[in-house]
Length: 96
Image 1 (cartoon, rainbow, N blue to C red):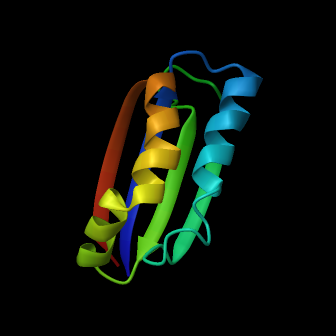
Image 2: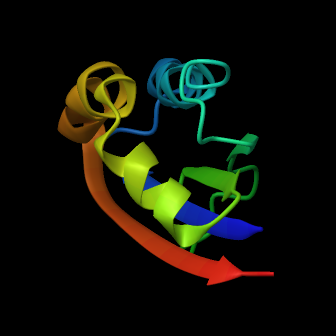
Image 3: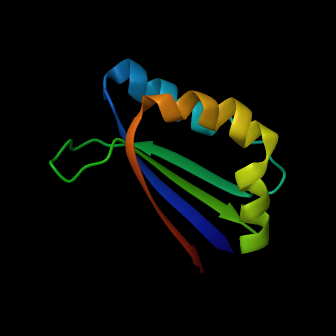
């Protein structure tokens, strides 16, 4: 399986924004055929090192992840609404 892990730092990590970001990401389930595994979590510790939201997504291959990246649902329904909320994001992509 190929994993795409992204941590998001919100401009404002209010409870409302955290829930909105999480809901946007979770809404991908069942909408993007290439997406085989999806876990979204909210930070609970709020330390100086913490990011606010973590996305763990799984695909059959790197090529499937590449298709997901440009899928209209991902681009138009998720990124279009999530990006304005973000201060920063970091990703790690790997096979396991």
